[in-house]
Image (cartoon, rainbow, N blue to C red; front, side):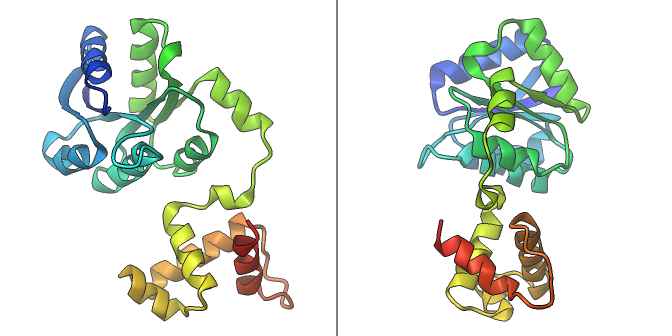
Length: 212
């Protein structure tokens, strides 16, 4: 099992490298920020990436965004997110990706090496591992549909709100119009905007975004 680790805290990062090593996992790279990990990913070819949720520069969702990007660089890579707190929106965002094994654990609740190794094995084989507290909050909190949008879907919806056409959105994001149409379809589905033949779904989506 080959793993890469990213955490901005040197003490936590080195401690995690040692713990993973004791659990029988070969750590092939450790990094203090998400960008460095992503840059090294093609060369290191890990089976799993272990990332803190919040990292430089903004300490918001860098780990989640890096995880999603890592899946694009290395399809099927397992992702284990570690956090001090349950970040419900971020957990949902990664789980909705659906393209490989994924775990979300609270740092203070990883009780043993056996537990960590079991979680990593399950993720590497395509399974899901969630902290019980994360499960409780994911099931117990009513979800705002806008929170389910991916970062790219939010970008598309923001440009829609500016009145741009699909062609203009594609030019702004440097993607094809087909990709924009795919994102817009996903936005409509996540917001529950079915094609009734009467309501203008594009306008309704923009209104939902502006009223958030």
